Amino acid sequence: LARPSGSTNERANMVISVHPLCQDLPLKVLKDLDGGNTRTTPFITVVTDLGGAHKTWFNPGVDKCFVPSDVLNKKAQSRGLEPSQIIQYGLPIRKGFWLTNEAPQSEKKPRIPFFGR
Image 1 (cartoon, helix red, strand yellow):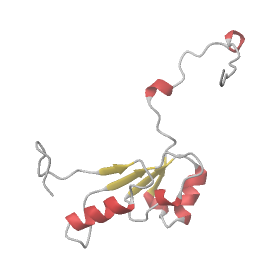
Image 2 (cartoon, one colour):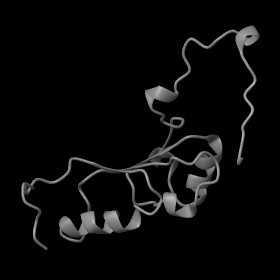
Image 3 (tube, helix red, strand yellow):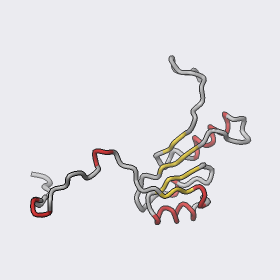
Image 4 (cartoon, helix red, strand yellow):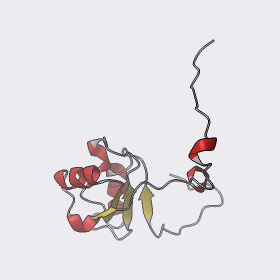
């Protein structure tokens, strides 16, 4: 395969996956790039589901797997990850979703969703 113009021959320092279907194949490719026996590039998974994660999130070949809850910590272990591979850290969210300067309860207005016409 030809490299896109402007690309370099440099390897990634680390690979971070945030999708359940992006575990197995990238791990195989990295291993192949390293000669087929071992993988030297660290591979991290960040599980972005809260409680009902599909089994494809959990590949014992990763270096670390970040999970958001006790439920997924247990599920990761049941799928073959060692406790030393799992980091329970909560669900990462961008700053725009953080609650700041929330109005007092007395000033809150009820929100009623409206669907359709």
